[in-house]
Length: 162
Ligand code: PNS
Image (cartoon, rainbow, N blue to C red; front, side, top):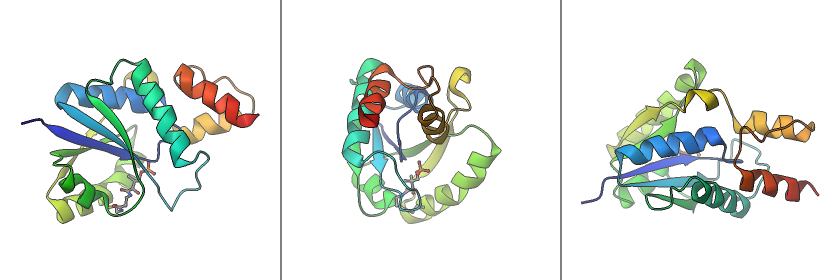
């Protein structure tokens, strides 16, 4: 039986840090679903369809399509979706202690609701401190973000700016 994990988040947009975590998760599980989730607590820059396209292209660019599937989850509880999908784990990336403080309550509630544990994976050092928010801020002020996002994501960001 396939070992399945889900990797949920806003991915607004997906960064090379996210892709690094996804690649690491794909070494541990047969299938990893990167779930693009609407988070009402965040004002998103890109709509779900655009984020889906960006993430699909970024996954393809890194050659991860055989084990990683990108989907949108736009309603309901993550715990319910995780159980329905037969996930053995919820994967989250972490960069620093602030991320752990933010993630631990969700990990606990998700486990209470579904019995599914969250595992935290760091990104490669090169992408250790990147966030979607920083990428958006630097890009909007004219900075070069080509080190932080895949080529296809950068192209889409440039198109959306026009
Ligand atoms: O990248 P983000 O925005 O920090 O990801 C947070 C996200 C989307 C994973 C979280 O808000 C979530 O799981 N939302 C789905 C609804 C849900 O299950 N909420 C209870 C979480 S314990």
